[in-house]
Image 1 (tube, rainbow, N blue to C red):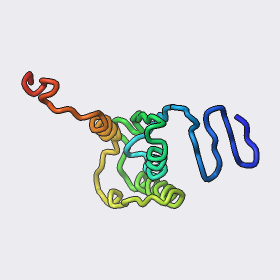
Image 2: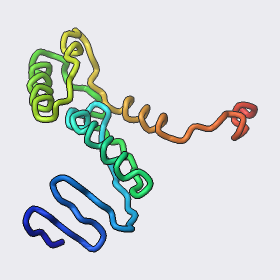
Image 3: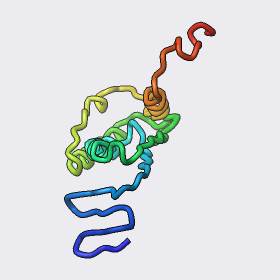
Image 4: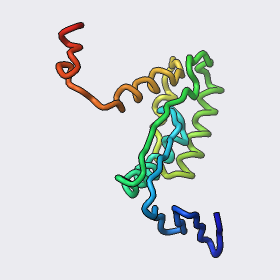
Length: 138
């Protein structure tokens, strides 16, 4: 990579502050995220813009992780305060609004595994149950 005057170039990609261009190259962006991750929410708009700008030229793969798989942390004022401060920071930095109503709940199991699994299931290509024969077999 060679960078001069705020412009970086490689054999396949040219990047400057206002424009990104893939020169006859194909590639893949692998996104590692979690549906309950604050920064993942914070970059949502930017990720959408990347997907749109590079549609057909760059494959996107989503890998769901577990920020807090299994939960188990106490849902108390200390946890709520930590989350509020963190969400406020991400909201200020990213411009993405947060819904703080969850912090008013008396009980909550902060387990990110079920939402991560749900995202994986709904992000798979949907097929008719008749197409695979599973409706008849099951």
